[in-house]
Structure formats: structure tokens, C-alpha cells
Length: 461
Image (tube, rainbow, N blue to C red; front, side, top):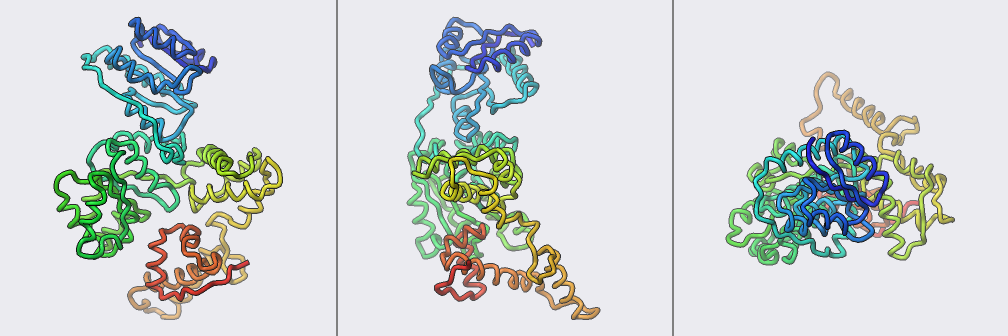
């Protein structure tokens, strides 16, 4: 590498490591713990690349990016930050940062990015300065629990930053409780449409002669989100297609969320092909919590802080208790983690939440894999179900069971599951849907389809 690098970070160790690595690579390095000093160097014309932290003793590094762009057009800036949230990634993209890396970063990776930035700077034709601003965000944006430094989440953040100001339709997929609706809200809140309406639509909102046109009128050029579009029936899907084909001028940004695999459902004939391709301009896949275990401590800390702000007692999780939290599979994803942390904040006897207290809550909620069947034989639920199915096939001798087996078996499992869950939540459908990890509208639809009688139910002890 060849060039002068300006490093700004209040951590002396990071300044030392970067200075040594960049010097060995052939660069000259000026390092400082002050944004004021960094900006003076920039104004003096020093540096071919800036590597800057965000939170500094004398200011916010992101807020300096527009000033750097105006003072030195074409000077690349790599942002490094321990604030590993979607807001940091989006703000870095808005401010035209060359790149963004979460802390702790991989040094060889940072060196490769620095080399590319220096080479691009050497070859680049200087463009007119880009006018950029970092605006204060709403409380909703600040509270978004979209926290994570794992590669899966960082890739998601970067993709959100790239698509937020395009007009492409966005399909957000992921399991219940992963934060799909929060991603949709973040895309709106950080986009050029942030001052316009954000409208969430469900299947029933499309009913009636003026249902679709009413939705478009309410959105008024803002964002229109179809919530859990995979649950829409054929009629509702058709209405969405017709709505999208007649948007006219100043249309809203179209987004949709789905916890089911729409591509697979489309292949099986359960979802319209024309609607799938209209909604899937860009697909954002939100990873399940079990796929980003390293983010669990940061998320738990986030929820502890939020709980304290909401009036819960001050709490912290003991290291051995945190290991137990990390080891759990979290079938309900981030939503389940938040509910568990808040429950621990109430039930813990001391400021430090112990391993025993975590076991008392999670010990009765094991990962899905160890669930046991109800025949007393100690089999896993999967093994128990397999035995029942094998006996069902055996009853037909050498012949196959009647067609439609999949639907019949699903009905046999869904009905007792929903009935027991309704009993456990005393008939509260919102709590029941959260417990099952499904959308409330999906639960209502299942109750109707399965003809489940909804009465005042006794809560199971």
C-alpha cells in the first residue's frame, strides 16, 4: 500500500495496532484521539484515507463525514464502531462513508478494505462534493432492537442501507419474532420518505370495493407494508396484484413481510406467481437468533437497559447464566429473548441474575429438539409422531392411505396445539399467537379453519 492514513480513535490500543499494521504495509500514519485534530489535518490537506471511530470524546465521527466530503471531495472514510446497530450502518451509508466495519474488527479484513480505498483514491476523478446531512432520529429508530455484529446481521444492515432510498419493492422474510416489521420500519424511517405515512396492511384491509384504493390514499407516497403476505388467501392476493398494477403517480414504497417461504409456496400453487415477482424486487432475509448466537449477549444487554428505562429493577446477568442463555435455541427468536429478559428482571432476587434463576425459566422451556412425546415412553416428540404415523400406514396393509394425508396430519397436530396454547394463555389470542410464534391473523384463521371453540379458558398450571 502507498499513501497517508489518518486514524481517529479514542482507544490507544486500536490506534497502536492500526499504526503498526499500516506502517508495515508501507503507509504513513497520523493517529489521534481527537476529532478536532482529525478535522484540522483534513483541512490542511493531509491524508489519502481516513479511518475513524464513531463515538469520540469530543464528538460523533459520523457527523464529521459531510464536512470531510465538502472540504476534501473524494477522500475515502472507513467508519469503525462498537455501536453495532442498523442505525450506525445506515447513517454511515447516508453520509457517503467508503466502508463501515463493526468492532471488534478483523485486522486483515480492514487492511484489505484500506488498500482498496487507497487504490480507488489514486485512480479516482474527483467528483463534486455530495451534500449530506445526519438528522436526529425518532425515538422509534433509537429503540429498534436490531443489534448485532455477526456477519449475517452486518450483511443485512448493508443491504438495507443500499435499498432504503430506491423504489424497488422489498420482501422481508424470516421466522416469527426475528424483527421483520422492525426492518420495514427502519427502511421507512431512514429513507427520503420518512416524513410521509407508514401504513401496515393486512388481508382484511383489502376487502370491500374501496379497500385497495383506501390503502394507497392513506399511504400518500410513503410506505405501504403487506404484513405476513404469505397468509393472504387467493382473493386478497388478487386484490394486491390489481392494487400494484394501478398505483398511478406518486405511489407508495411497497414492502411485504412473510414468515413462510413464498418461493416454495408458489411452487406448490399456494401463492400467485405474478404477485411473488411484483413483491420480490429485493429480498431481505432476517436470520433466526440461533443463527447468530454471538449477538445474544448484546441483545440481552439492550433489553436490560430498555427494561431499566421502563421502570424495571436494575439487573445484570452473571457470566455463567449468560452462557446458559447463549446455549438455548430460542424458537421464538428475539421476541422470546426480550420477554425472557424482562421476566428475569422481575423475578430475580438480587441485582445479578443467577444461572439457577435462568434455569428456573428456561429449564421448563427446553429447545424444540428435546421435546418429549406424551406416551410416557421417553421418546422425543419427533420419534413419537413417527411411531403413530407408521402405525397409521400399517393399518392400510400394503395399500397407501387415501390422498390428502399431509393436510389431515397437519390438522391432527395443529388442533390440540392451538387448543392447549389457548388454555395456557387463558384464551388471550394475542398472547397465544406470541407463544406459538405466529401472526395473530394467522391464529384467527386457524381457529376458524379448525372450528376451534373459543370460550373463556382456564389457564394451565
